[in-house]
Amino acid sequence: MSGSTEENAWEREHVWHPYAPMPNPNLAYQVQSADGVYLTLEDGRKVIDGMSSWWSAIHGYNVPELNQAIEKQLKSMAHVMFGGLTHQPAVDLAKLLLEIAPKNLKHVFFADSGSVSIEVALKMALQYWLGQKKNHKTKFLSLSNAYHGDTFGAMSVCDPDNSMHHLFKGVLPKHRFVAPNIESLRQAFKTYHADTAAMIVEPIVQGAGGMLFYTAEVLAEIRSLCDEYDVLLIADEIATGFGRTGKLFACEHADISPDILCLGKALTGGYMTMAAVLTDPKISQGIQQQGNILMHGPTFMANPLACAVAKASIDLLLASPWQSRVANIETQLKTGLQACLASKKVADVRIMGAIGIVEMKEAIDVPAIQAKLITQGVWLRPFGKLLYTMPPFIASQENIQQINNAIGMQCA
Image (cartoon, rainbow, N blue to C red):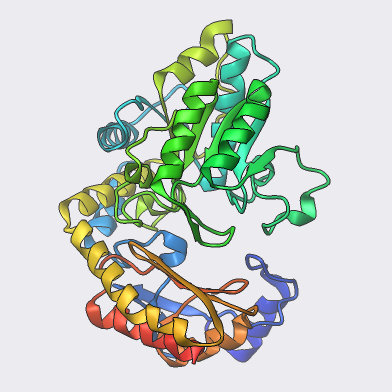
């Protein structure tokens, strides 16, 4: 599309965007190109991508090392099925993931997307207990305000009352939800452990359920309770993995290791859709005890292009001063956004690592706010009452200052 008025009107009538009506009454801004931290729109305007394309583009765009990884892999093969076959990019990526992940995790299952990785993790937990002949352990425990994805299994462990999936409450499997405080958690485990297969959590930072934080002490208590009551722990680090919270993985804030770890989003540096599920050997061994195998096998599992760019992205991250970059972003967000608390429109400001959140007292008029932000050279994607940013780690001091100023103007 050239971006003409006629073509924009056609797209709004026919192309369905996420979390949007069809036809779409709101404008979708056409991106012509992307480089560094900037998106260049069809009309020539440049805006800082303060969203890292939904947490994923941690290195920014048009990254030479990632471009080269895909171009090199493309010359040998773009894809091959993973059933009965293998390839070096998958092996190399798996080795690297296990080197940097919690040391108890020894096995890697590659999936298509974050939501699919949650489906796989839930299946693993259920099949593990089937292998132990504990067929009654079929329930999951999740946190209030949890969000784990948009597929059906993932939706079932999203808070049915305080999430975007409340419309499906009547048809989804019913699981249990508990507030992230120690007293509530202890009571929930005491009450429900007998038929609970696993607890699934977003460590430290809860994303689309409200951009909420909880303490490392709570996460450590969850691990302890899972051990005490013989419940598996699934850590959903799709959003928090690869440095976003200031630690490589958010589990490190509490120095705990999950039984199953889900990764996605920044796994490929925002270049391709891919996810990974890492497990403790007890999971795979437990599944196989009754002669079973894990019943999952995506067509594009371990896509070679995605594996190659994922390894290149992780290598680039580890070779960079990412800790100081994230710490500097955190400091600057705190300095710039805390002033928003003086506004009568603002309920709260929350900052951790390269995540900055301003919670308003009233729901945000998203199209109107986005239009204003674009005039200030910044792209953000607010939702509900939340105006928030998670910029690429390569964002400069000037970039963050521009994001802070743009957010601050909406709070005035």
